[in-house]
Length: 505
Image (cartoon, rainbow, N blue to C red):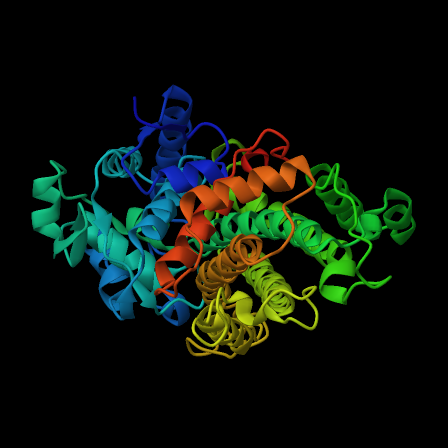
């Protein structure tokens, strides 16, 4: 049975991840009733000769001019000028999550869209058909116009699409997947493009990746503490309660579970470097920041990003700015800051681990035979490059507003850039935490004590099963990725899902 999503209910992060593959999307009677009522109301409004943006007008800065009289021609009028995207195609998983979010927004019945548009999106998500969507072109101010325009054209059989990973002319892709070209009028076309669904998808997927790495780094910090024989008093509950930040209190509670049973070696200094001693404060602040992003994503997944909106019960057509992606822009920038500091922490912990001056006398670079072998030397170099890459790109996008569209869009949020950048950085962060995990696995091989906490022992066992010791040297790029995957999929009895799948609900 395939994964199911009901458009009558809220979307979850798990739904977006599942949409990478074909899923069953339900659009039941309630959805159809809402969408049909909105569409009937649109016909009434147009019959009353009321002005409706995109139906009776041109677009953007040309709103003061009349649109095309034939609504089928108006669809071309909407989409043709948006064929201006550049750059590589977006990852199909991001595109398909985007289309699911767009379907949910339209299914709420405030967009005046034709019911068959919902049907087409539902049918598409049940196949491997994926519109080819350019990465560059959206400023997130009137929705993700250019990338969503490419998606709408692909559904019509124009442009390109992917089927089972192969890039094809969209018309051929429709045929291969048994889909029909989607007929659109002006309102349908505008409703498909006039929203922040790409920005929301990328923000949500980045949030999931960062939350995963955040949980992994808590566990790895515990393992580092145990292997080096550090005193775990920096996690004391009374200490963190006086700090009075909820994130730090919760992170400390989680880490104490993982470190339960650990005892210090008595050979370390009274106070550890900040990369260990201040880890609950740093990781706790990240948790507080991620909770803010949780709220933004939840609101975006529940909302309607479109213009205008139709309210049949109140006999209202309301023109406004629900397509303005400022919340996600701020959220994406917050994610970038969190990613950079989590990456800093993991990279510094790896540096501590490979340094014989600070690691309790383990060999330099954790090499099994220093000089004859080089252990983690290449991995540390790569980690330095990765964190530099993350930090270089951490400049906030949401402050880069500049006017465009004849000053119709005189302020813009640039949330799409913030979200896609955060998703890129989140993938790099995973490689840094994978590098640290590989180092911790190697540390035991070259003389670190075995874990004294049951939770840490289970983590090390999972790593040891998947990754052999580095002895002799070998290329480690694949081992870093393997270690990252092991940590991200940990399912050990001691660790709750507080920072894992529970966040998807």
